[in-house]
Length: 362
Ligand code: AMP
Image (cartoon, rainbow, N blue to C red; front, side):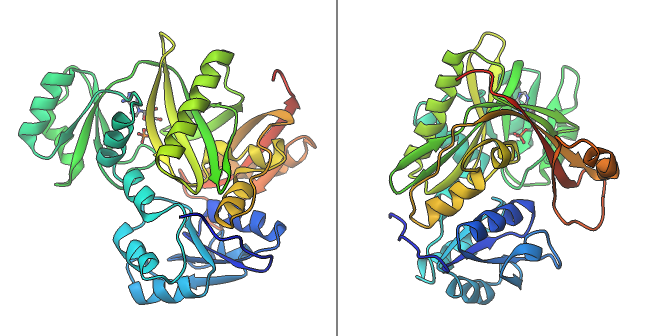
């Protein structure tokens, strides 16, 4: 179903109240929309800048229905929300949900996600479903070591996954699933991790240049835009992201995380049907950011221009990295974004800083 064109002053609902919701709300305001965020956290990053906020539990169908009724369209800023409750409310006609509940269901379960990708001809690491210790032993025998065991659902920032090396105990590895379903993946000896953010609206797609991602302790640390890969590979990565968004019949924004192997092939790792940390640079380096695009796409408006006017380097400020803010501010070229989080816990994304550079190539 195509999204209805919303007039200025309409309300965009955001499920989730973290920094992605915050930056979506800021972009929405610039486009003349109101926002209403829904989530469990008080004085959250999104609440601080939204027109309205509802404090609620994602499983509370009555609260969700009331929230949907107060919005003209609803989106979500993270994929680990219980899809059943949200799908039921969206289906009952309270307000449309974009990306659809079907996209959310596919992307929040690694088994559904990888099955979908392989079905449309997109290469991933070899993988097998694991639902018992015996299934894990079979999968390790088939795929070989090293390999990576991941929970099928609710994983993020390296949580819910374990690498299985030559001598690792399978019993100990199996324990991380805590009785839930998982998948075993072959280890990809990658040269680089890249991602592509693509928006899809009423009339086609808008794709950002592939970017290079470096992680620290499984959390994104630095994004370089563009990724230092050949033009041909860059085109291939963009084409893959556009194909995936189109086959999903996406309305919204999708991030496609990919590995570039040492022999120059692409293996898709993961999909996120929402703005993504590796797309934050677009706020400062592109005419339309990933947050502008999500608002435009779900409000039935034409997409904005994703072509960058500058190259960019984005650095996350994680935990007590924020202590360096006074020093960062002393550099006038540092474009600082803070998320309004009061407490700097280890591993917590507190903000990011973007540096722009003259564009290197087309
Ligand atoms: P994920 O939660 O699937 O995004 O994985 C988090 C990080 O773990 C990735 O960004 C990679 O650095 C690493 N990783 C995950 N899966 C694999 C794999 N099959 N082979 C090699 N590294 C992986």
